[in-house]
Image (cartoon, rainbow, N blue to C red; front, side, top):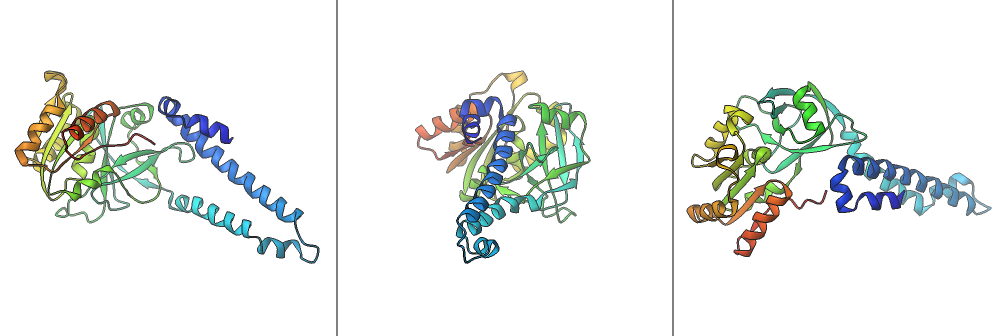
Length: 289
């Protein structure tokens, strides 16, 4: 089982068969934990001193208490597993916005969603509810069509969905460290950007095909509310942009201290690498999950 976990975790296989990697890692991990429990109990029984009962030996076993701590650590996150109601807002046949009221979120956080909590989980950056809105609790996420799971959510918008744990900090949290920053998103990467606009001087750059048709007027309005001079590049009309050049100009315009990009792996590595070679602090996902 350990060999199977190691093989499935190889970067190439993990990217090609990510759902299978998650299932193997989770199910094999639990199986190994059960085997360790059996092994520890058998070892304690076989090494039991003649003057002690099995119960006394078990209680005095340091291996057992260490195993209890390990098991508790693993089980703790599952105690926060729950199925919560969700309001689905259809933006287009390409994107969906899910609204939650079960928790509050802060800038830079994400939540995990699932239809089958024992097998697969999908992470999405949260968009916190603005402080001046009537609702005091809640957040939303943007889901765009990018695979079987997201396609199912868009085709059949959910009314309830599984969540686990509490909102966790993501890459966008770093934006709060800077007084001025350039934020770049492609496609549904606009979700993380909108959710984590820091209280500082920003320039928002969004590259996506047919932004109005794909994401709706409400998202467009939110973009311009966050940055009235935002750069929205329609790739369907204008082709692929040179994000490095656009980012460089934006850095000069607002005298930015850093850059954050939310995109696919190829574009992220291209932009982050180019900006770092220019001496600019640039941040993006590390693509190691």
